[in-house]
Image 1: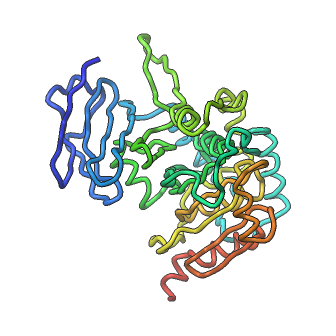
Image 2: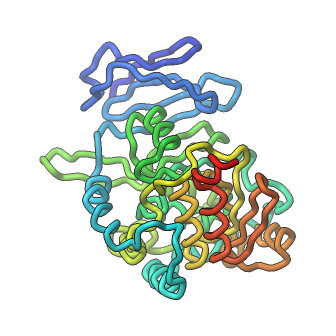
Length: 355
């Protein structure tokens, strides 16, 4: 496999490499990235590209599929309009909360036992008074995506905190960042500033025969290699996605998939903080709302056996989840139904206009 290196001076931009035959399906002649968080240069590799940052931060790399799409994104494009018909309309309106909890509980059963506990035996030396990584991982995803769900399940098992940047369909901010960084809107997308690594979860690799593809579980494998201290994902975590990974999406009628049309377009000055673990039915409902509002937040995973439960106990006085902290309004709430009402009331466009 041949490798060409393209170095760009600051300010950075991307240009098509001299030998365009190395990049299959490459159609954009020039890409510019202006975000201060992710200044990057690019090395071109056949069938994929590796992105490297030239800044004061560690070098950032991204393994980017050359494909323009994947079976999952195509399927979601068809599924979204169908599920929207059964989603109950405006997510901010009053809901049958008993029904909401019932469908979310069924979703948890479909993914049992993944995303419920931390594999904490291998992390005895972790100091819960400090961050679990020097700099938090950054995850671009949306709640209804089954492959995003698999990554969040892995994060729960690894007892890792992460900055979540929701990317619902109709996103006005975070999808654009992913498109500029990776070249396309495919999710999930992980940025690890500790190692300078960025990647998609499902890299689509074409075999020699037409229409034959394989999906590589890049993010989950990377997380366990980098932070698992020799551990492997729970049995069935990777392979089960194609069989039961879609069940929560269907049972929840696509909640956490679309941007709420009345959401405030301006992000809050500070990120919200959510104590949660992936397979908790009440926390799922809150994460759906955060996604529909496109609110970035710090996800503190506190599954069974988590070393981070000490932080939750100090903040709330109990180990119950979900528990949300909003530093923008000095608000702390521990009831999922009350959290829903608060989020849609506080972060609607009408409230923003009135203030």
